[in-house]
Structures are given as structure tokens and as C-alpha cells.
Length: 443
Ligand code: AMO
Image 1 (cartoon, rainbow, N blue to C red):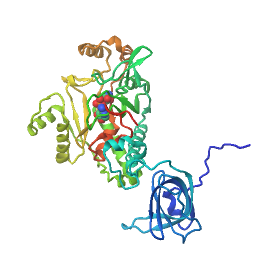
Image 2 (image 1 turned 60 degrees about the vertical axis):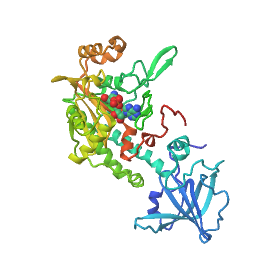
Image 3 (image 1 turned 30 degrees about the vertical axis):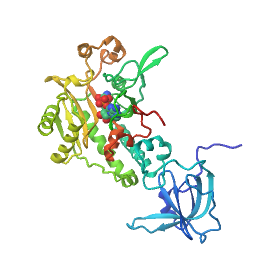
Image 4 (image 1 turned 120 degrees about the vertical axis):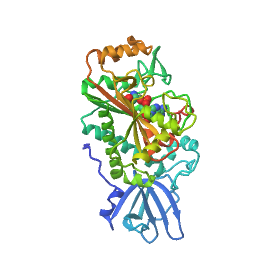
């Protein structure tokens, strides 16, 4: 009888272990990525899970004869001898002298876009239309490997700070952020909403776990087509109880960002190098109040009409200002106007026109909103009424306040926005695996 032990016998050798096998015959599995035929030699690049391995074919090395079935995108097992290869920069690289190629699967067609070059060269829309194929390009996929690193760093850091990971429902009884950008859904005859954020639930879990975080999709019915808005994005949220001030939240985020950037530099060095990512150095992050930041913008920029919030060009200006003044890629802007923040935001007791809230600007774009929340039941009900909301519709949310909640606060960090500016992309879609926007729901 066959027994399943839970251990998959490793018959292949990952590229990162090649250094230990110089002169030995090993096997790798991957897709034939690129074939370069010369007169008496061929270079066959094999795309494995994380690396592209150069394999060299010559009749000198083996009895195997290169056949017509070795085509780009075929899945293959390649066996060969590990040798050190020459590099211009003197770094350690290895290649395989091919002894055998076993074709495991043959593609039915040639890719619609060239993916075997250093980068995919086509319009963004063509790239996105063919995403299952274009993502195979090593540079395209590196974006999302790096994105994995960001999420991993966020998770690892918060776990080290005693946060509990949660998953909250995405089908909700009410919009959490107000405004019109909420998707309505017919739910067995009832109107419900796709989650704009995990806000109402992450707060409810503070009296349960004290500190919680979630990494998950959220939905925004943005009706406009911009380079920074998606209709579905990944929100990295946390919420923490027993805070002394909303600066505790900014400190937690700064700690998380330091950890993330360090993780990217170390564990994701191949992707950082491939993408020429400029990983920011963070020692501390400067803070400025909204009112003062607005004054700076008014002084330096023309035609500012909205005095209650920032236009994208004001964020871009503030990003540059923070870099010039403090050498920082990040800037916290605090104390946004009460009128402009959602109903759950705590007003500043010293100046109720403003809130105990903040945004984080990274290289000129807002990547985070956060702040302290109202924890007192009467205060929350009163604020809802003031804003024209019906507290009865939020009865289950208000259980948090009614049955006792500690002072608390948290934030939401947009994964794609952070990735976009880490990599210097002009459009957030380049940092989105399968973007959903006003014109796109496929692939
Ligand atoms: P907010 O609505 O400001 O706050 O969103 C938080 C962060 O999410 C990102 N983001 C987006 N990314 C891509 N496309 C969009 N349409 C989009 N909208 C927002 C941004 C933004 O800074 N509940 C609060 C957070 C909190 O206070 O805990 C919230 O969702 O990076």
C-alpha cells in the first residue's frame, strides 16, 4: 500500500543552491524562456520559480540532440552539469551544460506578446489584456514578488508586535467610508454593499484582540479613470487599542515600514536589483499639520481652489518638499479637517474643526490614511446624527461603543500605491496583478 508522508521528494535543485553542486549533474524544471541558436552552441534560458537559469547546449557535452520540441513556453525538465559562468561584473553566476531535456508539456500557440526579452514592450492596455502571459516575463513578475515581500514584512512586523490576523466580510450591510464610491449588490433581494474597507469590523475586534490586522481586497466604485485609482485594491489595515495618542499609530506604521524596507533589501535583493528599485532609508518620518501644509502649497502653487483637501499636484509638491527639507521620502500630514474625514474619526478636543488623523505621503502620493477613532457611544451617535446618518442602520457597529471600547485607532495602507511609488511607475495598474478599473474586468 502506498503511504503519503507529506514530504515531496526533491528531484530538482534550486538555482540558489548551484554553488554547492559545481561539477555535479543536477536537474531543474521550468519553462523554456528563450532560445538563442549559434552555429555550434545554443543558449537556452529556463524560467524557474524565481530565477532564469542559463543552460548551454553543445554536442560536446552529451549524446542528447536538440529537437524541434524545444520551443519557448514549453514546460521542461533539464538535466546538466553545473559550471561557473563568466560575468562582466565579476559576480557569481552558474549555468548548466545540458545533458538532457525532457519536454513535459508543449504550448498550443506562440505568446501574443514577446515576453522572452528583458522587458515587455507594448502599450499598458495590451500588457493588461494579456496578463496571464505578460506576467511570466521576469521583470513583470518581480513586481509582484516584491509585493509579496511588502505584505510579508507588514505581517511579520505586526505579528512581532502582538497583532492578531483577521479576515472580515467583504459583503457588508453599509458602506464604511461614506461617499458615493460604494458598489451595491443584490443579495437575495436585499441591497448590500461590497466592503470599501474593513473599518467597521476591525474596530469591533479591538475589544476582542486589542491589536488586529488584515491584508485583503476592498472595493471602491470610482467613476473616474485615473492613474492612481483602482476599483479593487489590496488594503493593508491595522487597528490597535489602548493608545495614548494617535502618534502611537504613526509610530507603529513607521516601525512596520522600516521592517518592510529592510526585508526587501535582504530577502528580495534579486527583485530589487532587477527592477532597479530605490528602497527608501527610513530613520524617522517628519510630520506637518494639514493647515501648515496647505499654507505651503498655497504659497508655492497656483490655482488652488479646494482648501479642505489636497489635489494630486499638492501631494506631489509636499513629497518634494519633504525630500528637500528633511531628506525623507515620506511625510505624515496630520489634523485633517473634520468635514473631510469619515464619521468614525475622533475630532481634536482642542480644536473640533480638525481631527486626530493623518495621511502618509510617499514620494508625492498618499499611501495611507489613519487616525484615532471615536470610542464613546454618545459621541459616536451624536456625530453620526450631525452628519445626517441614521445610527439605527449602524446598530451592530455601535455595539462596539455601547458595550465598552478602549481608546483606539488604526490605518489603511494601499499595497498597489506603495508598490507603484517604490518602483517609480506612472500608473498604479503596473503594480496591480489583474487590475479592475472602470473599463476593465478581464482577465
Ligand atoms: P482611505 O479611503 O483613505 O482610508 O484608503 C486608505 C488607502 O487606500 C488606498 N486607496 C486606494 N488605492 C487604489 N485605488 C483606490 N481607489 C484607493 N482608494 C484608497 C490609498 C489610501 O491611502 N478606513 C480608512 C483607513 C483607516 O483609517 O484605517 C480608509 O480606507 O493608499
